[in-house]
Length: 242
Image (cartoon, rainbow, N blue to C red; front, top):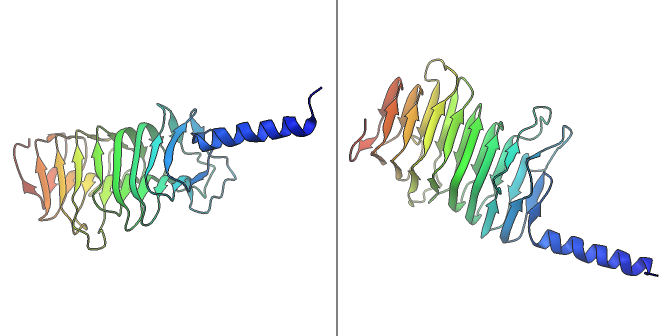
């Protein structure tokens, strides 16, 4: 006959192994240690969720790989205290988020001030406000699809990066407006407030009020614009854009 104490110990040990392996089976969750973390299924927060960071997944450690496992992180309209899908905290470095969907949050993925070296790869993101909001520097966004579902705001917003000079690059991405906006309406990429180089290349912009809003350090090359009211403003054109 097994000892109840032994059985409880074995259960606790197995639970610890699962947690240390970084398997995410519910949200909200806060990541505080380096390592690889993987979503086990499609996830959404409960209606009464009230996480400290207002995020379904909060990353507070450097050197983290978050693999969505081909699954979706989905906003719950009833969870009014959850603003962010994934939030990368202040000063966090070397984070990769990839392989899945982030849907319906006010801000799908956001990085805080002084964060560095964020890589977004192979994501599908949709939001009524901004799909991705970057405050850090040296971010790299590639092979991602952005769908804006609101009438104002946009897909990707790059903010002032606290005086740091490392470039942010956007490569092989798709930016689409799914509803008709008003005025400036929906923007594909806005980097007009960034004081760092932003390089946008090999991307497609469809149905947006403004494809790209940049400044004199925004470089754009080999992009395709379809049914955009304004293709770009304030950018330096490099290579072929149409």
